[in-house]
Figure 1 (cartoon, rainbow, N blue to C red):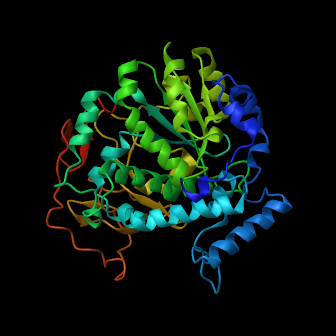
Figure 2 (cartoon, rainbow, N blue to C red):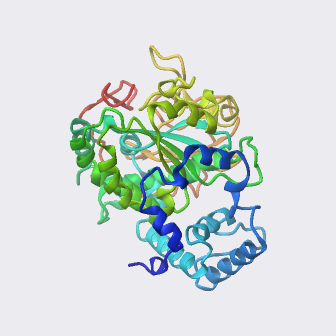
Figure 3 (spheres, helix red, strand yellow):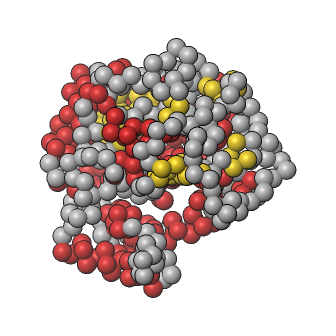
Length: 437
């Protein structure tokens, strides 16, 4: 067991509560909505710390600095990690400094050993997008607090689509030439890249948009998990797929989940829930709400404006599983340059595929297409859209000489067209109708 897991992060009362089902008091959606409507949910977050928590944050940063894992801001250079990130680890361990340090060290070692930043920068756009269609997807919208809303429809992850996804992972099609010798399974390398997008694009972008508490950065996401139309056998077949995501998040991306709303639960779901909840720690379990059909619309509306709720769940948003993010007007003013022209038969724009970073005053477009880097910088608020083939945006700033110093593509890093998908004329991988709308 990792050092950071040697101390329980829950009190005995909380541990007892976690053994109950989703009807336990902490899983009451009405009470949760009431809390979210105020400022209680901000406790332990930046600019909402007690004096004791402020001191523990400083002591934690000092300890990490002494161990060589943190560099404070000095002489105009930014700190290696912002306070919001450090607080995620402290909250995960209930401000136990030793426990937070152990988990932080493990995560930093894991990031180094798996070259996470290099992975995100060099991943093939097709590989990234194939993974995107298998996990929770950002709708492009936010809840009333400014937290990004993700949707995960389980029924699309049937044996046919899972086989198609698995077929895109082989020794001849590495996720990135920088990871050809990695012992980590490709499915996890791709999943790492998706989490990096959450931390380095979606959350920073949402943090710069208007919301009730702009003094506190957005560091979490809200998820709608639709399990309607899923049979018991399919749940069982997806056990490993979903468990990967939950274990990874708990270990290396702590405190990035705000709430999960499970909707469309079949009659046998209580049985399934009995083993699903074992994948999560008790604190995470307390953030999961199983909604009846009658509870879906009123609960989601209490957290989100109808314009941010997909139509199939009682809202007004024209967004379905498989769609790219559909930005609201405020977000579009900042990063509308990343939108692509609407495809034939569509009335809304698309969105650039692959990894991107939000840097406040510009967006970095990363990833590779056929082994060639498309790295470039795009000013936020710029008007030209990216070309429909997902390459670097029109009028994007050319990479500097330093930025051009990327590893040469590996001789085996060839593009492999995934089965069960079709290659569009512009070179993008377009999902079949069974995967995307």
